Length: 325
Length: 216
Image (cartoon, rainbow over all chains, first blue to last red; front, side, top):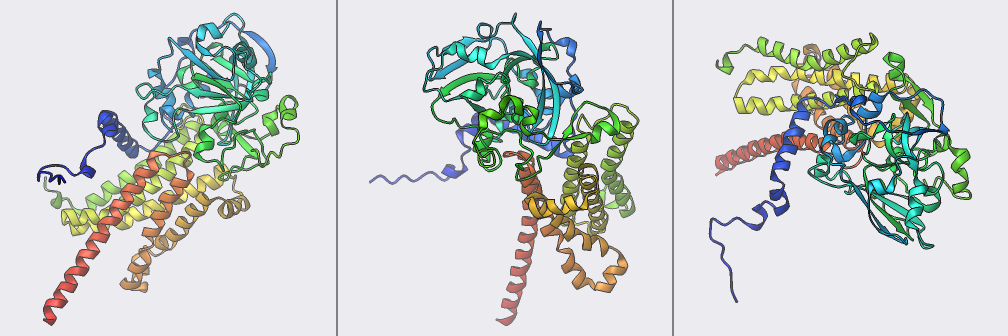
């Protein structure tokens, strides 16, 4: 039997830096230095401003899906974002999302459908058929916005893939690239970010694929070049920067549900009667509609299905929404 | 310049300014906001305020706990005199943090606050930290210290350790997903507590060693 005696200078197995840490040593250092810097300067929303004029305009027809509440300002929509691929601070996406490469962009379609494959974005979206919809956006953190999205109905895109009879659910996947999305260095969630809908939810006329906001192409922090908008569900269901669509017979895993199943259910419908374990969902802070003190304190009651009950309540007939939250 | 020649009065002044700056900055931002000017609070000023005050309170607690190790390293006994000011600043930020939550988030509804304390773990933890720090702030005067006697006073002020542990855990439970900042705060606390454990263990074994050699 060979007994290996390591020479005295040899590192023990547990003293060796792991290959993956070594390979990412620069990011590792940068991330730690950034974290140290953040420690000295407490986390305040120091947003970088996105100028509306810098984004290409889109032609869109006004849709009848438009609520009449005052719009959230462009500045608020583009500076206050939850997009953990760029960091967990609300200002991080606006600061760091410029690294995302959105051209060329393709979406991989897989699973229970007749026309699976890789599609270029331009082949999926008819830029002459865009419409503008003004939707209410309700975050699970109990704040809300009113946003003019530009895009196409989700159903109009999904049906082109000819999902078959076994397709009961559709899953969406966000781009996952460490160079372009520095926040993915940290295991905040299981990357890539993924979300899903039941097929009848996905084919509801409210479900929308946005390529623009405020009449312009989407800023990267808002999920460029293409994102989902499902206004009757909490914001995290409206997955951003989509690179994958997969049709399946079984309920697909979703990122927040994987992270904390007790707190984030698959359905995640806006529901003021089901509390998040850590905060109430009965009311919400209105972001960026007013300025000054009144704007800082502005709140409203949260409505069932975010006010879209007429359109979507029938999808959940007979279901216990406390269990299927 | 030799650090040791700086008078303790100057160090106190410098610490006062450094620990007062975050409050001054926040006050200034709110003044700008109320005047309708652009400010650093972003589009959700209430959330920004709560987070800023919570982060600051926790970090000043950690700074307070860092003074003793710093004294040991620099062998500047006078540093001990900075602990009270740092501790009171920590309590000041804890109070502001609690007030901004109670005032700006709950619109001063004590009933809602109590419901939160009973129901939400991270609020329970945060309020417990506040409850543990309250007697420390109340007994921070020289008179209170004399009345309690140094032994009882020191024992009481050990509460800063569980209070800071609760504060760090409060932050952990508040964050969504697995976030790095609570981990950094926890590591700093672990280091500061570890320092003391090692020190006490050394002192204990040195004492025992002396006893052993005396008896032999």
